[in-house]
Length: 400
Image 1 (cartoon, rainbow, N blue to C red):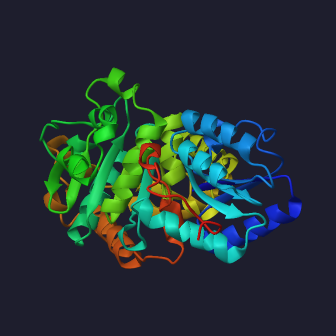
Image 2: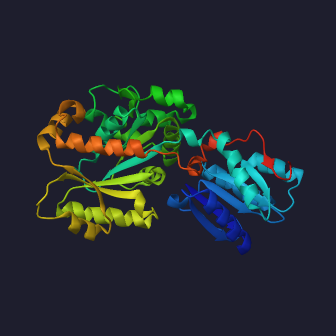
C-alpha cells in the first residue's frame, strides 16, 4: 500500500511519518515538504492509495485540488489536516470525498484512530485478509503458469479457500492446466461490469475447479484484455484478498501498468526461471526492475524450475548473478509435467509419486502452516474502489 503525506511543515511531516510507520508496517510511505499545489503530479507507478494533506489554517484551495485528484485517480482516498475547520469547510470536504478531517498538527492517537475508523467503512478486516502470491516468468516457457495453477491446488487441498486469477490479459491459459471446463465469464467481463463487483458477482464469474479452488480466466479475445484498466485490476484484487485465504495471480512478464498493479499488491512475487544462461540474464533484469520499483528484497523470491543437480550452471552462479538467494527448486520430471499439462489435470491427481508433486505439496504445506494474520496488516487493505468511498458521514475530532 502506498501512502503519501504532503505538508509545508517539516516537523508535521516527520511526526505523521513516524506514526504511520508505527501503525502501517506493510505500507510504502512518501513525504513531500510542500503545499499540495506545488507537490507535483504522481507517476503511474507512484499513485498513492491514501493521500494525507496538511492544509494548515486554510484548506479551501487544497480541496479544489483534491477534487481534481479524485476524478483522475478514483482509487485514492484523502485525509485532510486543518487548524480550525469550519462547518462550511467540513461540508465542502465531504462533497469532494475527503474521508477524515483532523486537527493540524495531528496527534498520533488521532491519526491512528482515523485509520481505524476508515478500515471497517471500506469493508476490510484483519480476519478476512488473504495473501496475494504473484507468479511471473523471468523468461517465456519457464513453467510459471504450471506452478501457479498446481500450487493453488495444493493450497486448496489443505482446506484453504483459493482464487487463481489469470492476469495474462492477452494470452492467458491458466485454466487449461487444471480443467477442460470453458469459462462463461472472464476477467475482462468482470472488469467491464466493475460497478457490479461484489463477492457474489466475483464468485459467479469464476470456474470452480476443485473444492475451495476457483479460477478467474483470462479474456478469450486478446483485444478485450487491452480494455482492462489498472484500477479495475486493483478492485478485483482487493475484493479477492478479502474473500479468499490465498489469491494466486499468474501475471505476464510484460511490465505494463496492469501487471505492475498486481505486483504492487502482491505479498510475495515468485520469479520463475531455469538454470540456463538466457533465463539467468532475464532473471537478473527482472530482479533489478523490482529493485527499481522499491519492492522489499524479501518480497521477491526466485524459484528454479526443472532443476537438476550437477548441471553446467549451479545455484550459486545464479544467486551471484541476480544478487538474491534461490527460495525454492522444483525438480525436473518432464514426463509427468507434460502429461499433466496435455490432459489439463493437476499433477497431484495424475502423478502422485512424482518428485514435482512432492515438492509442490511441501511448498503448499509450508504456506498453509505459515499463514498468519499479522497485526497491522489491515492497513494494506484500507482502500476499496473510489466509487465506494462516498462517506456515510464525515468524522473529525472537531465535530466530536
